[in-house]
Every structure is written in C-alpha cells, then in structure tokens.
Image 1 (tube, rainbow over the protein chains, first blue to last red):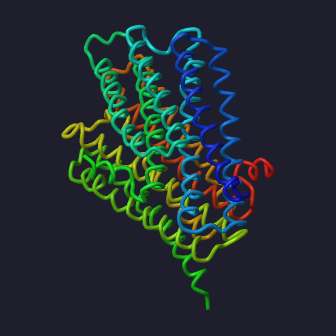
Image 2: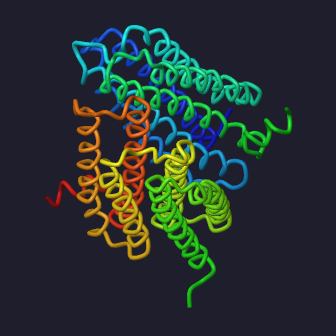
Image 3: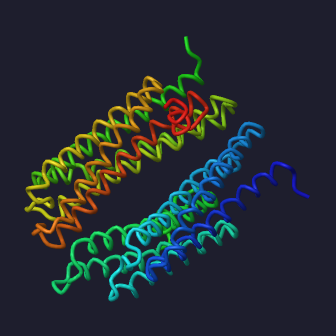
Length: 221
Length: 221
C-alpha cells in the first residue's frame, strides 16, 4: 500500500497525463477545424482551453501544497519541481492548439490553408498529436528511451516545417500575402507545440537519469 | 543582519534581475542588428544567449537546493516556486531575442525588414526593451502598481503588431513573400517577448497579493 505522500505524487503525474491527452486532442481537432473550415469545432477547441488552464492551476496548487506539507528532498523534490515545469509546457501547448483554432475561426467560411498545403498541414497536425500522445506515455511509463526517440520524431516536424517554407518561397505561390502570413504562423504553432511535447518528455529523462535529455542523447549517440 | 536563508532568497531575486537585464539588452541589440544588417552584432546576441541559459540553470539549481535545505513554507515557498517560473519566462525571452538575431544573420547583408517598416520594428524593439527593463524594476521593487501598468504598456505592443499586419495586408505590399514571412515571424517574436516580460512581472503581483495579475487589475478597474 502506498502512503498519502506517494498517492499525492501519483495524482500529480495523472494530472499531467490528463493535460497531455487534452492538449493532444485539442491540436487534432484544431487541425481538422482549420482544414475543413469547421467553425463549431474551432469554437469548441477555443472554449476547451479553459479546462487545460484550470487543470494547470489545480496541479500547481497541489504541487505547492505537497512541497509545504511533505517537504520532500532529493528525488522527490525534483519530481515535484519538474512537474511544475511540465505543466507549464502542457499549458502552453494548449494555447498553441487554441491559436490554430482561432486562425480557423478568423478565416471561416474559407480554410486558412490553401488546398495544395492541406496534406502538409495535416501531417504536421497528426505528428503533433502523436508526439503529445508519446509524451503522455513517457510520463506514465518513465521510459527514457521513448523520450529520447522523441528528439528524432521531432526532426520530422522540422522537415515538414521546412517543406511548408519551401512552398511559401516558391515563385509559383499564388495565394497572396494574407495566406502566406497565416501559413507562416500556423507552421510556427505546430513546430512550437512539438517542441513543448519533446521538452516535457525530456524532463522525464532528467528525473530518471539526473541528466538533461540532450546530454543523455549525445552520450548514447 | 539577514540570515543565510534570506540571503539565498535575495540572491535568487538578483539572478532574475540579471537575466532580465541581459535579455532586454539582447533584444535591443538584436533589433539593431536586424535593422542595420549588422552580422557581428547578430552573432554576439546569438552567442550571448548561452549565458542566459547558464544563468537559468544555475538559478534553478540554487532554488532546488534552497527548497531541499530550508524547506520553506507559505510565502517563502511561493517565492521560490514563482522564481522558477519567472526564470523560465526570462530564458524563453532570451530565445526570442536570439531568433531576431538569427533572422538578421539569415538575410545578411540585406536587412530582413523592408525600409518602410523600419520605424515600426524599431518601436517594437524599443518597447520590448522598456517592458523588460520595467520587469527588472518590478522584480527589484515588488511594486504591484508598476507591474499592473505593464498590462497597459503591452497594449501598445499589440497595436504595433496590428500595424505591422496592416502593412503586410496592404495591396501596395511589393516586398514579396519571403519578406512577408520574415516580417510575420519577427512581429511574433516581439509580441511573445513582451508577453513574457508582462507575465514575469505579473508573477510578482501574485507573490505580493496572492492573486493573479488579471484578478487584481479587474478588481481595480
């Protein structure tokens, strides 16, 4: 049987996983709203972000209570402090999903993304969702190898981001400036979302090994 | 005479102020590098960001040591935890200054910003620097009113950001897509930098009043 302290610690971990699942789903739905110019779906993502923010505040309050009541040291202390940073990553990821949804709403009833970029944006959206799902798994399993894999997965996001820029810079770009601006911002939202997923999972590596993800990766590779 | 504990706490506050001063200066120099297409200055900003990252890691380590050794409760605990979040805001602000400098480097020997936008970008850069200087002052003085003022100051950044977009969307835009993409990203870097300065100062409000900056602002006005 676990004591209250470890139950509280576990429940913070569960809160992080719930946040990751929520923001991953939000980014998936925001992408669909963007590509299908679905106003209702966009609105639901925008409203749903409040739940993510509330979860973060709750999680933060519980982490601070835990610090005050239990005064953990060493590894336990590191877990609680790291949880605070992970929840900040996830909260920010929720904002980015909301930004994508807001872009969908702004250009409704037209899709903010031109037809020939739909497949690239869809891939970015799907990859963003997979990265966040993997982040949730890493939080649950504390699997360091899985967390380190995510750095490589993120290279695929960078490649998609570059592909998007190549389309933008192509002389055959005929969609005008407004769409170029929308596409630029959109690309950045997905890229940042992926960064936060990787960073959040990387903090698990730090918890388990005491070293930052980059150090572990470079030592292994 | 202050005890060791409060000396350590003060030194964390000083570390935050130093970070704020460094990233404010970095954003000022990055803006100059961008407008003047000054490669050397851009490089110095890019390299200088490592110092900011090192400061943050040092500050984080000291905060965790403080938690472990002194096991603060109540307000003191809140100060340490909030410091961790403030240092994350400042570290991220440093990244954004670096992004501006990288854009300057990427387009060298040409300025990434077209001539007719120089004054707007200069204003954004100066405002970003003023906001960060004010953030440093708020950390030092714990002046809640000054922190709340920053929300209004930030409206000026949003107005500049809108102005930039109006230029982009103007039919007379003749600078092509690449420059439109650069300008879009650049605008976003300044806007996010300002957000982090405001958010960092807002955490001081939370420390002093126990309420979040938005709540205090809405109660007052």
